[in-house]
Image 1 (cartoon, helix red, strand yellow):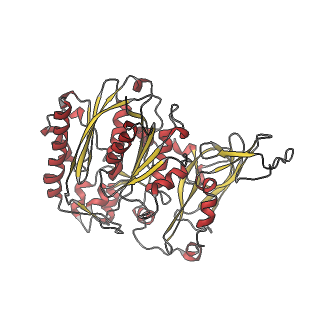
Image 2 (image 1 turned 60 degrees about the vertical axis):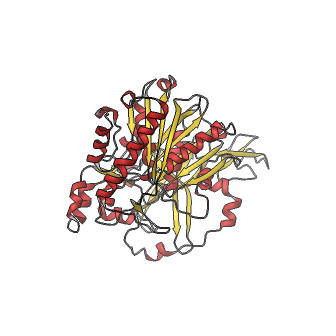
Image 3 (image 1 turned 180 degrees about the vertical axis):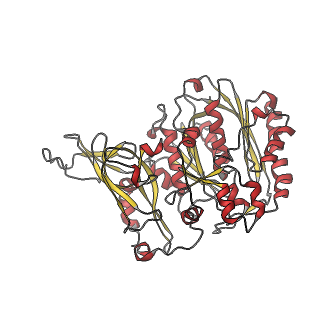
Length: 487
């Protein structure tokens, strides 16, 4: 039996009320009033598609039955990856501290990249060459100010682990349709999405390709759509989303919510995000159909096993939705997304060249937050050391690798700094004590200075540390997120 073994979600902490967007830009394009309901998820200034994919993957790997050492490959899907020629999946794999022998690949250039990656992972398991494959997807698409895309698009990540043991949703089969349908058009290097006319997208794209894929799937595997517990398909036009279900003869309860009022359309990640939301409510025996739409469609059929009843789900989508903070500033949103130029000042302009050779040599320490643990006395320390810093030990060259990224910590001390540059001042940083030993200085994120305190628990989160615009380098490291801020 091959199928989904675990899942994990990442919906950023910040939410932006769409009416606030309309109040700021509705004067320019009053039509956006039609999409001004609900809120959308907004990535923090230090989040991008890689960090959200890593966060979702960490959530997925939190399931008791999954160990990082058992992962044979990572497929990363996104249309907003930071690099065109440097494997983004390899960066994510380094952050996750996966085995260096694992297979890594990027899937991009289509909104159905995540379902294509999922099918690729399933095929890898089917071949017998791999036992557990991780599929992570994330997107942070940009719409121009005053556009409908600005209203529709939200930021999020999702991850699935597929394998052949402890399966919670068995893969039954799939069909795919390939079509050079020109709805969304964004050339290489362009930042903003440009789509063709909305009615064209609805009538010729969503309304024809999604039903066609679903009908082909039902015919191929001889099932009645009426017997499916949840049918999952993206379409950020609310009325058309409902209409597609009606045309297929589906009851309203069979159509999975698009999460538009809570998250927005998270691009290539959205089919998996919706699938995870369905899995969180699924019962043994439930059939789930998920469609990835974009330049054609992928339709996949799953059936939940008895194991889903006992699955100890991680944070998932529902957990992420509960942990939110209103972003009460449209201007702050434009700064976070780098939509408008800002005067950064001298401190913000200072950017030393990234020592890529040093990063390569110390990659596990920097990207995976892996330090050392003394085999003589058990003292954990970061960064890595040859000599144990325990004054009662002092052992030399008796260290073993020790991962800190999955260890909880507590705040030993902290400060808020209005002089150090930050896109969200004040810069907050301090000293963290790790459970099991180890102490180091960390930047804090996803928190308000006035709400954190000494002794508060934190968890590690992989974030973008800086962006060197002159040299095109995205720098990543780990930051501490106060747990109380997560709910």
